[in-house]
Length: 356
Image 1 (spheres, rainbow, N blue to C red):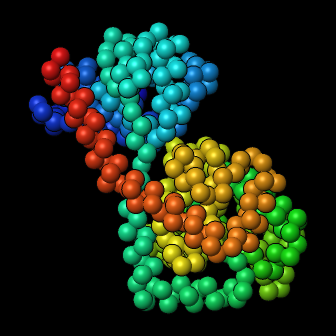
Image 2 (image 1 turned 90 degrees about the vertical axis):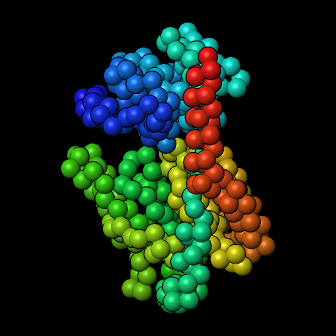
Image 3 (image 1 turned 120 degrees about the vertical axis):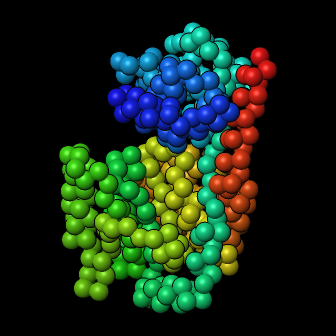
């Protein structure tokens, strides 16, 4: 709250009548309330990139009412999925004793505002471009040839418990147990740049994953094969696009995620004539759009292991059909549409409030 107050104090000096304020994510939830207290009546919206918790989970926080009341300072609250919007509406009805109409008009905490769903997208051409560059394509082919006839899997996540990397490692180990023919043939690359290294919990998860990767490699590796390459470094977007394209199965299995754009990046990077397969957690917002991925429960190690095997063995015709379906969604709901749709809805809220 202190940081938001400082931010609001500073931003107040720059705001002019007629300005529109668009705030992003939970870290800055109180900012709108701080600006209202400074007397600012501008149109303000917030977009929550992360999932909104169910009411019965949220009320466990001692300050849950203050948090949601702070959200009521905005004219428009944007969510990634209908589930998030529904969870917020449930809280308003049952805890705040407010009202929510079918079209997202909310009355609560002495204010009227709106809620809506705006699933965030990517610019697919930013991932299609690098893999179409002849020089980059040669690099990708050389990279792929190193695996011979083998198959590659890839996961790209920042270091965080919510990404389900530990459960994914366990599923990969289970797959090697259940499908011994894949030993020496399937290689998994997990790219996990460190984050929040000064926080004890993040140091612990890094140590746990390193130990888990070491266990898998110690159990299954051979002189000419390392089953799991666990990489703690960042790569450029262009280089990631090439990695995505070289890997036949993309693993995106968070325990909970607002959207998870890696899923869309992986699909957008694929070769249309020989695309890879996306294995996607049902608890990622992207699963609401990319329904032709192999949807899994990340807590179910056996089902994830089987989905990986299914992705490896999937016939080309089915891979193409699934990829085409997902790319149609990605191109339609790209980043530009997300921005334009949200800002149009926010402008409508401002016009409605001015006319009242």
